[in-house]
Length: 344
Image 1 (spheres, rainbow, N blue to C red):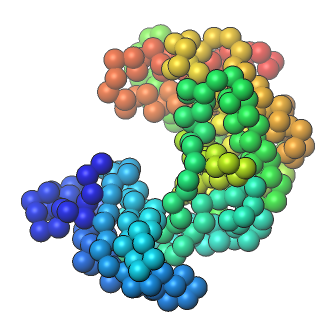
Image 2 (image 1 turned 120 degrees about the vertical axis):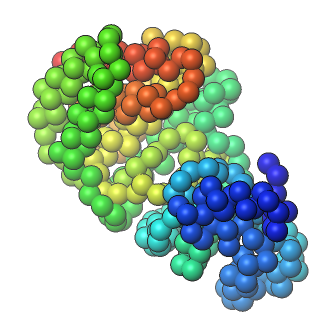
């Protein structure tokens, strides 16, 4: 990826400003190394003591999103080059930084076996969150290309991280209740039904089964939620398992995070092997490990939330410009139906 630091005073920077500057007002300043370094001088002082900061380079990691960009920020300091991860938002998200600080203090600090990407600072003038750059391999890469032993180990580590988070992390953020979740599912399924057959019939049938299943889930103690717990948001680093991407943190039913991760695993298996049929060993290992270490009353509720996540993925397929989007959408609906049929 080309370093964005070299874009200053060029037509490329002008193009970036035109495309994203209106949605993310502070983005041009973040992409300008001369302007950005003015906001990073604090890193020369305690507790960081990085020394004088010289050249700054900015590298695009996840760009193009209307409301947030993820950047690599490379700082040339007296002690050498240091790299941070920066996420610039369209609006104030200092709450994400505060939540990460609270989670870190609850036992997920830099030395913990189960940790999070450590927050460095939030710069309100830029709507910029700074975190450490993690070293290690993404769990997603292991599940896609690793051998059976590697995938089993990764599934266990990811499950143990989530179980610890659900039982120890502080409650912070908005509450995601079941009623609001079901309203979203209904809206998504109606959009899918508008595509036409055979999606319309399957979407209608799946909505009916979700309506029947929802009351059966019953009450459960809510806990801290990640909101987007998936293999691509987890780094496996030697003996540590580290999770990042906290934009969607909330308070929720623990089954939501569990089900979402399982569906991500099954979707990866589908793309890897070309079929979503049959048992998925990684998903089985993940669920069994979580159930042994996590909060009670989860297993019976997972099918409902799994079906809901399949609906969410099917909704995503609506906007994907790929030739297989219809087949993938239908596969998601079929899997949602099958999940609830097997549960009943």
